[in-house]
Structure formats: structure tokens, C-alpha cells
Length: 303
Image 1 (cartoon, rainbow, N blue to C red):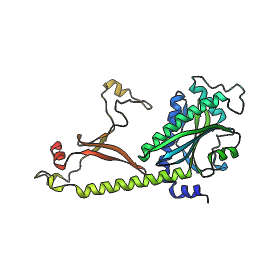
Image 2 (cartoon, one colour; image 1 turned 90 degrees about the horizontal axis):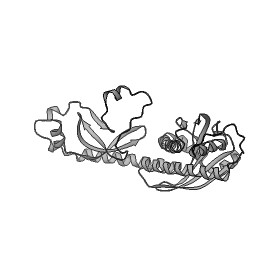
Image 3 (cartoon, helix red, strand yellow; image 1 turned 60 degrees about the vertical axis):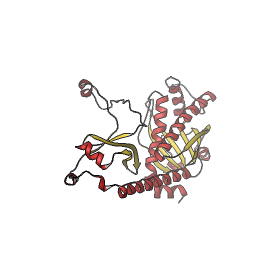
Image 4 (cartoon, helix red, strand yellow; image 1 turned 30 degrees about the vertical axis):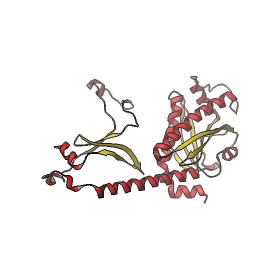
């Protein structure tokens, strides 16, 4: 069993959320540059090999290779078929892909430059996703943009110990597949960082529980302390007309003024008692509290 296979067997589930964040960041970046013409499902993981390439990713390939440095380090590559790369660059330039015209098996110098630009933006988005998910410093720099005529050349470029993160989907309604290759050492470092964050969060929560001042509660409130109350985290809110509300449908997009970097409010019985930032461990979300009132202040707000 290879090093990558061992990693996926022992830590694949832990890496899955990070892989989803990376894949979503890359496809969102490409979609923004290509006028929303991409559609991909959730990614799958596999140990990098000839046999684990997605069926809808035929040779020849277009590859953008990047180096990751900082608190987590390793390699990252964006891989698509040459035909898909040509379609992506056409969309980025505001054109429609010409499926009927006979095309060479390799990208022209101009097409390769355009694909490198797409890859650079996607890599930058992946770096942002890594920093956000792992709460650490991570920089990504594009190393090269190349074509690989066959699977052997592709695997030479991406390296032997890699995790494949891939999904099938469409670009301009044409079926295809998109592949990210992540160096196994990068994946291991990311999982280790996630475990460290979880341990730190657990320690902070335990310390906060032990240090909570029980003597600061107002008098005569002990009898109500066991009453169940809704604990709410508010993502964002806005006012709209009733007409706009009843006309919402599946697929509607609601834009809020609140920045994704702003803290989220914590409410009890619809009364704000503090705020914090979203924190994710495994398959669950939580709120890491940055500011909250004393027990006495909380009780006063709820009266």
C-alpha cells in the first residue's frame, strides 16, 4: 500500500472537508472568470494513479502547477483536458467555444498563457480557502502551465505521492471533468492543522467552562436557569417587501450587505448576548465566541 493510500485510509474522511473547500474555491474562481458556464458536483478523493483518473478527463491534458508554502506546504495542480482548457479560455475572453472547428491536440502559446491566468486565479482562491479552513498562513505561487500528451507525462508533472480531488460536470454544457492534485505531504499537514485547531478549541471551551464566574448571577434567578431557550447564530439579515419574499423560488440568490469576514451575532430568545466567528470541526459547525456579556449582563438582557 502506498503512502497516499495509507493516508486516505486513515485520514481521508478528515481531509474531505478541506478537499471540498479547495475544489469549491477553484470552481467558483473559474466560474467567475467564465461567466457562470461551469457546473460540477461534489468532489471525490483517490490516490493519484493512472487508474484513478476520471473517465471524462481524456488526454491530452492542460496542467497548471503551483507550490504551496507557509504553515502548510506542498504542491497543487489544476488539470483539465486540452479541449476543456480551450473552452475555458474562450469563455474567459468573452467568446463561445467553437466545438465544430478542428482543433490541434496542444494549446497555442496564447491559449496556454490564458489558461495559466485562469490557473493563477484559481490557485489564489485555493490559497484563501486553505487559510480560512486551517486558520493559518499559506501562500500559493504558480510554477508553470504545461500540456501533457499522455497519463505518464501527467503523473510525472504532478508527482508520485498525490491525492486526486476530482468531479465530473459541464463546461458550456459539454460534459467533462476537473481534477486537482494535492501532494500527500500537503494533505497530511492540512489534516494535522485541523486536529490542532480542534484540540485548541476544545481546550478553550473547557477552560471557559471551568472559569465561568458562577457567583455573578443576580439573586432569585436560579429557578429559571433550567428553562430551555433557543440559542441562535445570525448569519445576516435584511429587510425586503412582502411581495419580494413571496416571489422567492428555488435557485433565487439573496445578497446581503454583510461581509463574510464580519463576526456573527449570538442570540438567546432573540436578544443579542455576544458575537463570534464560525468554526468547523469534522462535519459540524460551531461558533467561536469573541465577545460575550457576563452572566449578570446576559440575564438582564433577557428580562
